[in-house]
Structure formats: structure tokens, C-alpha cells
Length: 124
Image: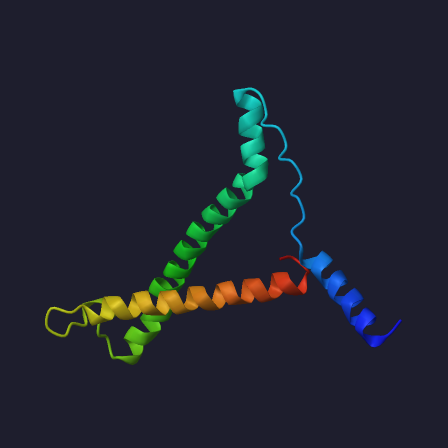
């Protein structure tokens, strides 16, 4: 075989790899309402999504309580008794925004730590 034949053979192999493969036929739709509902729940993993949503809600509430009840009183003590929620600049409630911003960053840190821990355990 000469060099041109080898190149043509390699190009034919590449072409065969790039040609679209036929898709397998879709599974038949389940019959009946109950079977369809079970298929929906298992296919779209609805229960896992619901559990994650509920845990996320309560995690947010927990972090909000951490900021409101533990961190902001320390800041209030450091600012000599100024109530942080009442810090205003004109019509802007800067203190309330600062509390919400701090809550957001703490939630980010907690989620980051949870993702790192689960990825070390091999959970994706």
C-alpha cells in the first residue's frame, strides 16, 4: 500500500465515525394514568428535586437565623448599640440590605462547602 491509499483509508474511517448513527426507537408510552405518573416521577426524578427544594428552603431559614441572631448582634455590639436594621441613608435601608447581603454570602459559603464535601465522597 502506498501513502495515498493509507490516507484514503484513514479518511474513510474518520468519515464512518462522523456519519450520524440512527437513534434507538423511543420506549412505548406507559398505558394508564397511574403508570404514566410513575414513569413521570422516575424519569424526571421529581422526588429528589422536591427533597432538594425543601432542604434548600430550610437551609436558607437556618442561615437567616444565624445572621440575624448571632452575627448581626456582634456587629451591633461593635457599632456601640446601633440597631443595624435601622441604618438608613435617606430613603435607603442600608442596614437591612447589609443583613441580606451577608446572609447571601453565608449561603454561598455553605453551598460551596456542601458541594466540596459531596464531590469528595464521589456524589455528583
